[in-house]
Length: 192
Image (cartoon, rainbow, N blue to C red):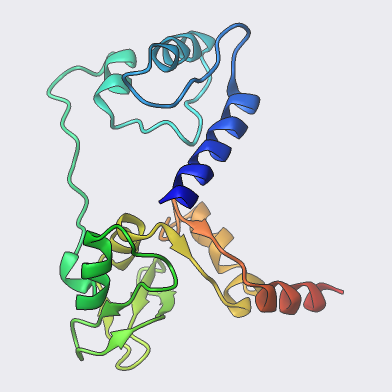
């Protein structure tokens, strides 16, 4: 928990450095923070697009944008049943991490510590079981909800799958990527 708080603080410090307006810091990022509300109103006056970290579906942003007609936040299709029993227990205890996360394939019942991400027939990326190759619907949204991290292997990085997806399909949108030393070394050596 302390690591997550420290990470959020570092991110907010970076956001404040990069996105603060003259005399108007971003603040904590919470909608109840008067500094953040002031910054949102001032940013809107600049006429620029909302930065990546502003959730456009939030009621506060909808009001600032003048979109007040029956604004309703859509519930994402999170599939709680994909989480393995052990991961569910850890999540409920606030101890789930990228190291302890595992999912349950709805097709074959295998407990997975990793999965394939491949293009579907419509060229969008989908998650597949490494055991049975069955498509795991809404895997990305479920993983983003429970963990928010992806640990890609070197083949995913070297093939450019992530950047191509972020331009088109957005399977990886919102994730933090953790690059383990082995993968970094493999990728660095490939470009030499």
